Amino acid sequence: MSHIVTVQPPEAGPDPRTDRGYAERARALIAEHAELFRRPVIRHSQRSLAVVAARPAPRRSPQLRLPLRPTMRR
Image 1 (cartoon, rainbow, N blue to C red):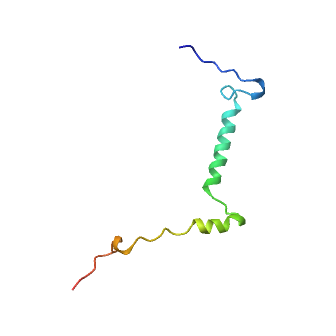
Image 2: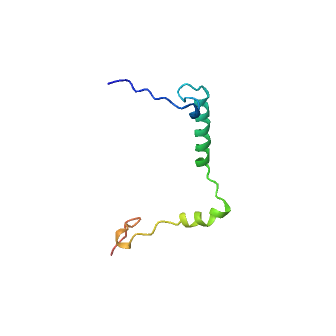
Image 3: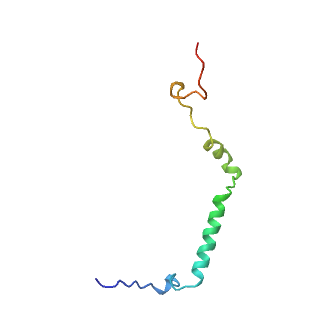
């Protein structure tokens, strides 16, 4: 099997495998992206949607729930 060589057109920009600043820019972008998910900011327009999304899960039917502690029966 022959070795596959990809040739980028000149308008594609520098090759990420040989560009030295590529790794640093990628790390900075990933860190910035992770920071967005670390502390979510709820904008005023999204506040009502956040309340709807934060509703508690529906309760299961009583016969499927186990008691918290054993009940004393007489």
